Length: 128
Image 1 (cartoon, rainbow, N blue to C red):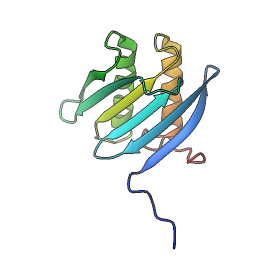
Image 2: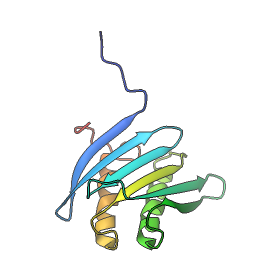
Image 3: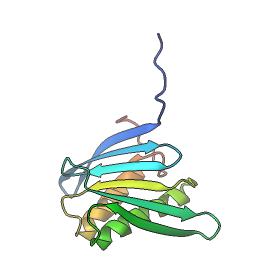
Image 4: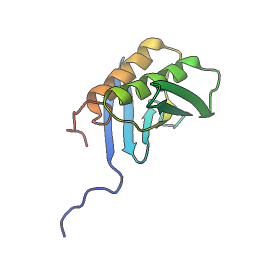
């Protein structure tokens, strides 16, 4: 029996962000779900939506830390990167970062995702 492609396209990879091991999984349904963890937990759940007509984005915290504006910036940056990569899907994002209050850490995670994930315009598929 030959191997079949998974029903849900999935990418998973590890990255070292400022010396912290970071695990990332990206699943593509009718929307994109990204799971990012440095603490082996899911953390905060955010939803980012894009309006294709007005090129505006909205971010909402669904579960977890509502008082962390950098997590909202994180989700907004990723939804913008999806739009640049010609993906019109919304984004659901689970984030469990060691230092979610550190802009450099968040910037490093965004760069890692965009460099390695096909959905976000990257393409290093060697770790799938």
